[in-house]
Length: 89
Length: 153
Image (cartoon, rainbow over all chains, first blue to last red; front, side):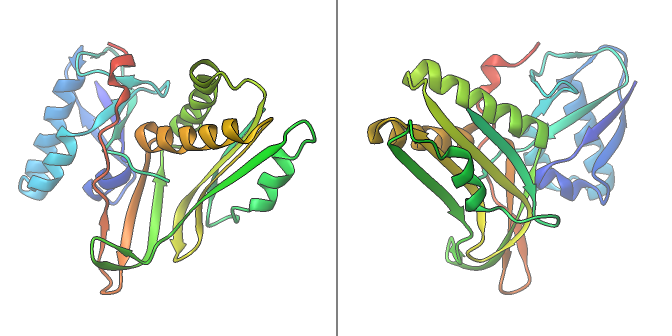
């Protein structure tokens, strides 16, 4: 399945675009998606440790703008947002 | 009564006059305006500006949730709340956030204003990238989003 991963905050440094296109297996979990992002970072940024730290400390949100847990199953092509640690105001 | 908005700094300015218009009502006896502004130093570094990034839909959703929770947790039902946050690049001294509240009494207004900014810090997906005098820039560390308990499985 194709995932359009929308990038926010510090994860914007992962690409010049505002998203990444990633391929995951059917019924993959958010945990699997996290691993797929790390795999992409290994290939594209030689495993940049600070980038991997961002992925591991991020939450994820669905197309419906809800935070989804690591066990959430991805059952169709969809947009998912990566939500690195926040700090507005 | 609630107003929320993400203000794109490339397109428009965030204005306290809009907040004043929104919360002004003779039924309220206390109004508080909280402004967040860009500071010139952080962690011993000279800051020249900040770029704000935002997940707009989630931020607006979080503002609405915070407003509704104020009803339940603080029992302040009669109120006007104006929340706007900027996205994009700001210079020193420019306003990044306006939280304007109006309530019947000052105790309620102080509590409500503080409650809203602290909750936004904890749960609204907004990020800051600081720009420094040596042309360098860095995303601030931030806090992992905390409402994982309410997340969907």
